[in-house]
Each structure stands twice: as C-alpha cells, then as structure tokens.
Amino acid sequence: MKSVVICSSQRFKKEVDDFAKKLEKLGVPLVLAPDFRYRPAKVAAAPESVRLKSASYRKGLEGLVRAHLHRIQKADVCFIYNKKGYVGYNTTLELGAAAILGKLIFALEEDTHEPCRHILFDKIIKTPEDLARYLV
Image 1 (cartoon, rainbow, N blue to C red):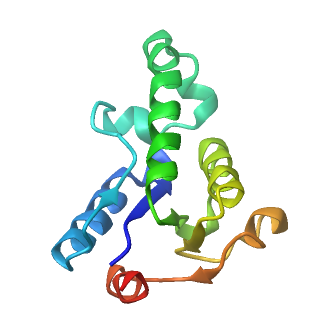
Image 2: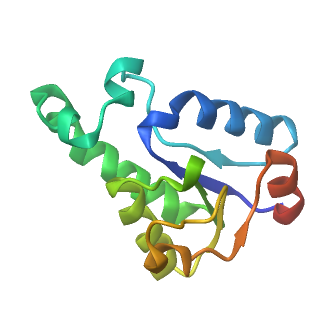
C-alpha cells in the first residue's frame, strides 16, 4: 500500500484530522497531514491575510512550509483536501511541488476556481475509503 500526504487549508483542520484518522484505521501505512496542532481554531479559520498580521504566525511559517514540502517529497501520493473547491495559497504551492515531483495527485472536489490547478488532479476522490482503495 502506498503512503499519502494530505494538503489543505488550515480552515479545514478538523475535517483533515478526521479524514487522516479514517485513512489510518483503514490500514494506510503512512498518512502525512499538515501540522495544524498549535493553531487555535480561530486563527486557522482566518484568511491568510489576517494570519500574516500575527508575528508569531509569521515566525513559524517558514518551518511549517518547509516541513510539509518534505512530507510531500516522502509520500507516494498527494491528496488535496479542497472542500467546496477551495485551495489556498500554501496548498497551491504544495500542489505545484507534488506535480513537479511526479506524484499522483488526488483531490476531494473539482477546482472550478482555477483551471491551472484542476488540470494537475489525476482523480477526484470523495471518501477515505475510496482513497484507501487507490493506495493498494
């Protein structure tokens, strides 16, 4: 079974955590999720332009971005958790990195906002169970 990295906006913190836990229960050997642990829900739900006003957020951002890019490099497959088609700035960067690295890229939903992102998706996958089947 292949490993998977999940890329997503912080605004979907709870949903991404639940999705990752379901994948682990389904036996996916390595599920790499974004590190949203230290962000309060209020901060995670705010737009990036608001988060960037926080000195502590800006201070930790470089390390978090680099760490997640390393997770993308390690994983076999990239899954874009784009609820309602939303892909933020950081996830767009991560999507590009996965594409350059030749990763298979799955997404939760179609990206109707930006065709340049959507063309990088190999398949739309709606559930952890469906994703686990593709990782076999």
